[in-house]
Each structure stands twice: as C-alpha cells, then as structure tokens.
Length: 139
Length: 196
Length: 158
Image 1 (cartoon, rainbow over the protein chains, first blue to last red):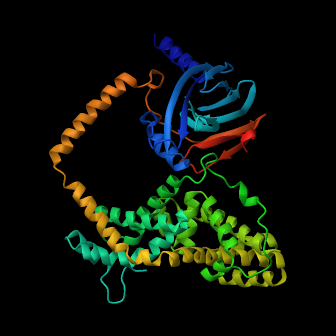
Image 2 (image 1 turned 60 degrees about the vertical axis):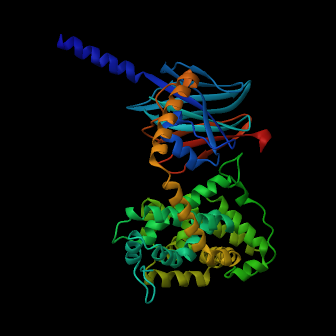
Image 3 (image 1 turned 180 degrees about the vertical axis):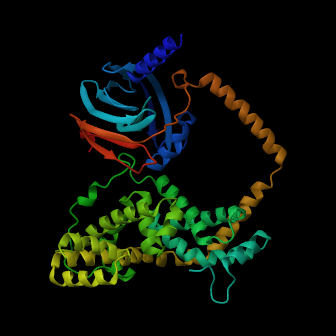
C-alpha cells in the first residue's frame, strides 16, 4: 500500500512537472481617468511605478494548463491573439515559446525562461486611447 | 548638515516642540530645509511650479507623519524619503510620454553643437546657452525616476551614498550603479555639446 | 596605467573613492592622454552642470519659495478641518460604500476575471530570443523588484 502511494506521488509530481499553467491578463493602460483595477492585486503599485499611465483596467484574463509541447491559444482584445507553448526545462523552471499576432502579422515571437510563479509583462500594442499590457505568468 | 543652524535648536527639539503643538517650530524646521528640498524636487520633476507643489505637499505630509519619526535618526533622511516619493509620483502624473513610457532613444540624437566652449558651471552659463540647458534638462527627464533621484541627491544635494540608500530604500551598490548610469548619460550630452 | 584602468579610476575619483596614490597615477595618465582627459572633464562637469540647472529654477521661483511657510500652514489647516468632520458621518459613509461596492462587484464584475489577484513570486525572467516582423521590440529591466517588460513598438507608429 505504501509502495503504491509512493508511486502515485511520483507519477503526480512527474505529471505536474510536465504541465504548465499559463495565466494571461490583458490590461488596458491609458490616461483616461485615474483608476487601477483591484483585480490587478499586488502588481498595481508596480504598474504605477513602471509606466506613465494613470488608468489600468483588466479587460480579460485566461488560464490554460498545457503539457510540454502543447500549444494553447489566447484571444486578446482587438483582433490579436497569443499562442503559448511550454518547452522542456529543468527543475522548477519553465520555458515558454510565445507568439503574439495581430491578424496575419507577427507582432512578437519570443522564448522566455522563468520560474514557476514568475511573471513577465508584454506591452505596447495600441488599444483605443492607450495600450495593451499583457501580464503573463506561469505555474 | 547636522540638523542645527548656528544658534538654532537641533532638529529633534523642533520636532518635539511641533508634536507638543507648536506649529511655529515646524515652520522653523521647514525654513531650514526648504531650499535643499526645492533643489532636489526640481531636479526630479524638472519644472519649478511642480517642484513648489511637491515641496509643499511633502512638508504637509511630514507634519502629519511626524509622530512616526524615530528620534535619534536624521530628520532630513526621513523627510527626503517623503520628498523623493512625492516628486516621483508627481513626475509620473505629468506623463511626459504616453505612447512610449520609457524613451531614451533621443539621447543618441544629433544635438548640433554651437561651437567649443567651457562646460556650464553657473546658472548664468545656462542663461547664455539656453539650448544646452534644454538639452541637459531633457537628458535628466529621460532618466528612469530612481536614477534621476540618485544623481540629484548626490550631485545637487551632496548626500552621502549610504544616506541616499536609506532615502530610496535600496542598497549602496544599487545607488552606485544608478549613479554610474545617470552620470554616463549626462556626460555624453555634455561631451557631444562641447565637441565641435 | 592604460585607458581602460584610467576610465574606471575616473569614475571612482568622481565618487570620491580613489586613494591618493591612484589619483596621482591617474593624473599622470590624463596629462598624456587627450581622450581620457576629455572623459574626466566631462564627468567632473556633470555635477556643476546639474547644480547650475537646478539653480536657474531656484532663481526663477525664489519669491514663491520665500512664501512656502504660508502655503504649508494653509495646507495643514485645510487638512485639520477635514479631519474634524463628525466621525459618525465617516462611519456610515464607510458602511454605505462597502455595501455599494459589494453590489457592484456582484452585478458587474467580469466573470472572466474572477480569479485571485496577481501574486507573482518572481520576476526573474530570461529572454532567450525575440523576433518581430512588424515592430521594434525593447527589453526593459528596471530592477529585481519589478517585472521585466517586453515592449512592442509597431513600426507604423515610430
């Protein structure tokens, strides 16, 4: 029984290591008004300290759990989209291949290495009177 | 600066008097530091009127936070932390560039030098050469806020590195690296403006 | 002393961290190297230039700075008045605001964002490669306490 439980624990750990949960929040940053969406949690202060915008509003947030090698698609505001593919990585690290498109145009292709629980921002595409800032985290 | 003017009370005494209800004591404290505070604020926000607002707001905030002040520590280090945060907040609200939030690209631009001349050392030098004043101001404005704060605290206020570290809540190593970066940017502007 | 060492010493001298012996050696190098001497002069000039620049602003605003205590005292009085408002008004205002916020949250908060707020544990990110067909991409690192940023500047907009 003990052996079975140990084996199950090992299998679950292996499964967890082979999957990555990618969380993408799409934030509309502008100078219209002066409010910061409480949904942004502890990074509100960081956004204010990093950028010159006065208003930050979360438009959408999606989360996908993907296996290594599996590509997940995130629809973004405007006609943009993001595809994320976890790649093989060691230890508690995550590697993500990311592609952000605007219709047929490739806005960005990048490969990122980060820790589980880590976060990176990708921003700049115009949206209404401001810009989009994507908050990308991986667990 | 050791917190006392000739014949004047030490900062701690003025703070105690303020906490005891003597607003005049706070006025004296304010008079002692307002010049330096303005120089630091204007170095960070770049605009005289905005700097006056920052100094005013910082002293008002300091008045109401005085009960949190730890006697024995330096008032001006404690106060400067409020001041620098107010100045940086004010700078962000001005939103000098909305499309590209951090823009240093113009630093590699083509400022046309007016001809060889000595480096500016006095306000009158800048009055004679407004172009250099504008160029240098833009260089300062383009620095990230905390790099700007470091070089202003060091070069304008003459603050020691460990004091700057306390004001900004970072390590002395971070202070040195930000100072090196900021000084490098300003140095290039001065050099390119001088070399004919 | 070669130019590379001289440049490092110039920076240290500007920070007041260069020992006297090293300063003397540096002076010897600067006497014979125009490029390093120009670098030294430019670095030494940054402090006075910055002080002169803030000096202009101070001269322009001297009268207003003289009157700073009037402004500060008025601001203190204003805040004092605001704090004197009856506490029971503040208490009920808080309760009403909390109820209104709860109603708004239940009715209007977008379902797609009803997850726990962001609580990142790390901003340590390595960008292995970056490519774009239609934009300039800037990588921004503002320190270990802030997220790394990949900023896309679409070419039509530069």
